[in-house]
Amino acid sequence: MLTDYLADARTAIDQQLAQLLARSDCGSYDKLFDAARYALLGGGKRLRPLLLLAAAEGLGAARAAALPAACAVEMIHTYSLVHDDLPCMDDDDFRRGRPSLHRAFPEGLAVLAGDFLLTYAFEVIAINPLLSPATNLQLVTDLAQSAGGHGMIAGQVMDIEAEGKKLDLPAMEAIHRCKTGALISAAVAMGGIAANASAATMEILRSYGNDLGLAFQIADDLLDVAASMAKRGQSSSSDLLNDKMTYVKLMGYDQATETVRRLVGHAKAKLAQLPGDSLPLQALTDMAIQLEG
Ligand code: IPE
Ligand code: IPE
Ligand code: MG
Ligand code: MG
Ligand code: MG
Image (cartoon, rainbow, N blue to C red):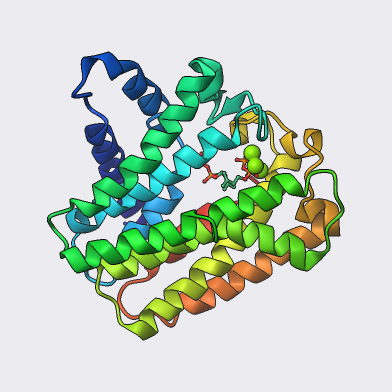
C-alpha cells in the first residue's frame, strides 16, 4: 500500500518533470533542453520532491497543487549536482550511474543547463494556478532562502574552502546543515506551505527536515567510503580524492553510523507529533537513509 503510494508519487513527479522540459520555444536552443533533460530525467531517487508531496498530501493538500513545487525542488537539486560535479568543484565524471553532464555535453552548456534549471524552478512555482499567489510567494521565498547564500550555496562555499583542512564537529555540522540539510528541510516545509499548515505543524516539519537533512549528508559521506559505483552512481571515493573533511574522517565509520541512527530516531519522533497521515514520511525516512546501500 505504502510502496504503491511512493511508486505512484514518483511516477507523477517524473511525468511532470518530463512535461516541463518537453520542448523549446526557440528551436536554436534545443541543445540546452537536451542537456537539461539529460540531467533532470536521467535517474535519481527523487527524495526531495517525494518528501514535499508526502508532507503536503499527508496534511490534506491535493497532489496536483503541490506537484509544481515538488518539481521545482528537484530542479534546484539537479542543478546543484550539475555544478557540484564540474572540474572547478568536485570534478566528478559520473553522476546517477552515467557520465556527468559536463562529460556528456560541452562544459559551458552544462553550466548553462544548471543555470536554466535554477531559474526555471522559480518560474514553475510562481505560475502555479492551483495555489494562491500568497502561497506561491511563500514557496518561492522558502526555496530561495534555503538554496541561496545563507543555505545550500553557503554550504557549498564552506565545503570547498574546507578542502585539505581539519575541521571540528561544529564546523563540519554547519557545512552539512547548509549544503544538504537546508534544501531537504525546505522540501518538507514547502509541503506544509502547500497544505496551509499551522505554525505549530510547520515547526515540527522544519525540525524533522533539519534532522533528516543532516543525517542524509552523513549517510552520503558513509556511502562515499563504502559503496560501489553501482550503488551510488558516482566513482568512489570522490571525497578522498578531493581531501574533503567528512564525518567519517572526523569520528570514524562506526560513530558516524551511530550519529545517523540517532538523528533518524529524533526525526521519526518528530513525525509522530504530526497531524494527518505521516506514514509516507516515515517510509521515506527509511528509504533516504539506507546505510547498507
Ligand atoms: C546527492 O543527493 C547529493 C547530496 C546532497 C548528498 P541524492 O543522493 O539525493 O542524489 P540523487 O538525486 O538520488 O541522484
Ligand atoms: C553535494 O554534496 C551537496 C550539493 C550538491 C549541494 P556532495 O559533493 O557530497 O554530493 P555528491 O557526493 O557529489 O553527490
Ligand atoms: Mg560537493
Ligand atoms: Mg560532489
Ligand atoms: Mg558526497
